Amino acid sequence: MSATPSPQSVMPLFLHGLDSSIQGTKARWFRAHFPQVGMRNYDGDLDRRLAQLEEQTAGTGTLILVGSSFGGLMAACFAARHPDRCRRLVLLAPALNFGGYRPPPAPLTVPALVVVGTGDTVCPPDLVVPLARAAFANLEVRIEDDDHMLHRTFPRLDWARLLT
Image (cartoon, rainbow, N blue to C red; front, top):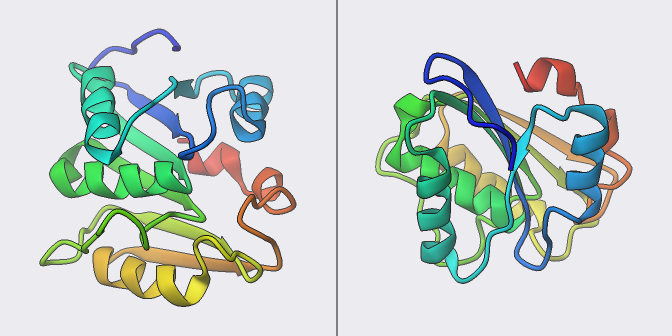
């Protein structure tokens, strides 16, 4: 895990998917291109992973959460609990269609970008996008010609802007 910044700073974090780790493609890409992005391995079910994220972020300042698949579900759940701590969410093929996810009663004002592929059979756009629209008032949706892994799309996103 990267060093913990002061409470006044913005901390970008990458939340990997269910069957992934910080040795996965996206995590390795972040280490090579944006080493300031914090990350750790999460394990267990959604509740356990959220508890690990709470522990990781205790005492930190504002967060930018980049969540891939199940990590996107984690980011959405964390933002619902702590909207004031989240500057932005970048949800890559978010697994909002898993774990019994329900959008909050009122859409969150946290800026959120959802990127999903037309060929995603795990988190298809027709299931994920309506849930995202219900969850976030300040939402940008990008539906790309890609699959669940978003390997073509991921490196082309404007990460310099998204991580600040």
